[in-house]
Length: 276
Figure 1 (spheres, rainbow, N blue to C red):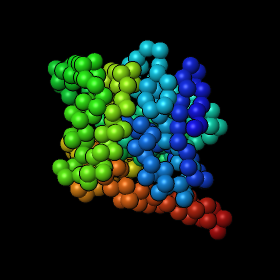
Figure 2: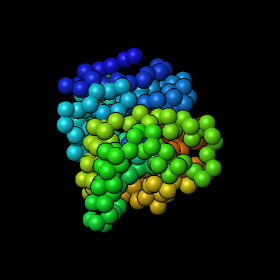
Figure 3: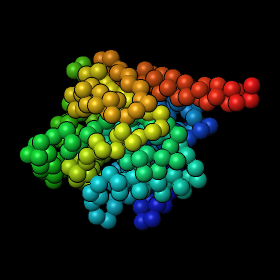
Figure 4: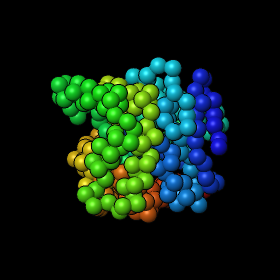
């Protein structure tokens, strides 16, 4: 079980494959276990690394709640530095997309390509009153419900109307591992999240993915990211919800590979042109 020490945090991660590094960042109700189909399916071409964010999975809790995704991104930088990579491709799902975007904006030289899936605008998508109510609801839920109760409450919203039973069961199993410190840290970070000003400044090749039936961050939200980020590509995955990568991992992996392969071909063509 690999771990890295990043300042006072012990960060757990899963790693498979060889090649250029692809680092995957999970969402609010997940951890690295949710990416097993990506660890397997993408590792033939890349070194795939799925972390457990601070307060999640097998990673340690921060001593106090994190309040902004910038703090998560700072931990991510220490994590990548410890892996001794000069640059990586980032794939972030939901709240993981917010971490990836912050990192990409502040450390563009360390990002070869960016993939955001079912991305969230957090507070930027809500009225002041709705944002405050959402934070209150999240904090109340994590304080009053058992993890399994919270999983049962949330997972139905995260999937399409008719998910495969094994997908729903696995999503509930993973969500049931939620811990208060991690959940509260993300709740506060979503409450403070507004990245609209930085989106036009993202300059790396970017892929935007969204489940066609996503009820949490619908296609209209992903369209906003696509419109704001120059040089971005937008793809939806039919018949899937917010957890599109779990509901249709083969299609998700194929979209990711097609995008990254096209970038590699573009680099090769540019190099060949230089030496012609």
